[in-house]
Structure formats: structure tokens, C-alpha cells
Length: 226
Image (cartoon, rainbow, N blue to C red):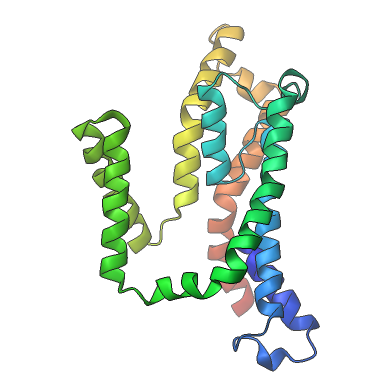
């Protein structure tokens, strides 16, 4: 979302006719779409080189890699170059297919928005239910689908971001495994996380990222008023 809006604002600032934005200006469509595609493909760089997912989609890809016994990182390029370069080539193939599909069928995709929302959401729920049940033919999977969907709707209503929750769900087990491994290496000594410079720096940065927005939200209005 951020690259899309940044690109839209830049295009509007550089345009000779900014008054046309919001009324179908082609620059306001092409620029944000190009930025969105660049950001979506860019998440593969930290994922493949460092094994760090920077979005919910990358977190799902990381889980898929781990299910097949693959650990993304620098060694992946030498251990499985066929997989890496096939994945990169698929991006080019996907862009070509999108070009072929979107140009002649743009009007059809636009008409999907004319479908009443209850019918559209009902169709999506039916397809999701069929997919979840056909995976293992288990009622438990359907129950989990509805429970997780209810939680997701509640988070959307209360404006709770979904991406951190998905990243936590994917990376939580991996973080616990590495935490136990670090404790085993340090002889069950928790102080290793604050005595090592790299660990202490990462902890301080994590705390700053978590507490920074709340601190700024609390003190900036008072500073501005002063």
C-alpha cells in the first residue's frame, strides 16, 4: 500500500495537469500499478538472500520452502539454482500473462465490482470452504476456516492490521526454535541476550520500533501546542 500511495503522490506532483487526478488520469493508474508490482516482486530479494519475509505473501512462501526442506539464504543459490532461477523466470512469465489477460478483459474484471457485495462475499466463502474441506476432507479444517475468518473480520472492524498477525503466525514457531537453540548454546543463561552487543542492539531497536509510535503520538501534540 505504501509504494502505491507514494507513487500516486509523486505522479500527481510531477504532472502538468494535477486536476485530472481522481478523474481517470492514466498517470495515476500506471504509476501506482508499476510501484505495486515492483514492491510485490521486491519482497523476494530479502526472502531469497537472507530468509527474511517482509510481507504476508513472503511469509507464506517461506513456509512453503520450509515444508519442502528448503531454507532460503545465500546457500540456496548454490544448492538449488534451478529453483531460484525458475522462480525469477516465473515473474516474467506472470507479467506477460497479466498483460495478455488484462488488456482484452479489462472491462470484464471491472464489471466484477458491479456484483452485489453479499453475493460476491458469499461466493468467496463457498469457494474457500470447498478448498479447505477438499484438502484433508476434515470438518475441523472448516471450523478453523470460520474461526480464523471471524477473527480476521473482527480485526478489520477494529482496524487491527492483519500483516503483523500473519507474520507472527508464520515466524512464531521459527523464533521459538531459535530462542531455545540460543539458550542451549549459552547454557540456559538468559543474560546472553543483553550482554552480546549484536543481541542487545537488536533488542533495543525492536523495543524502539514497538514503543516509538506510541511515544511520538503522546508527546508530539503537546510539543506542537507549546
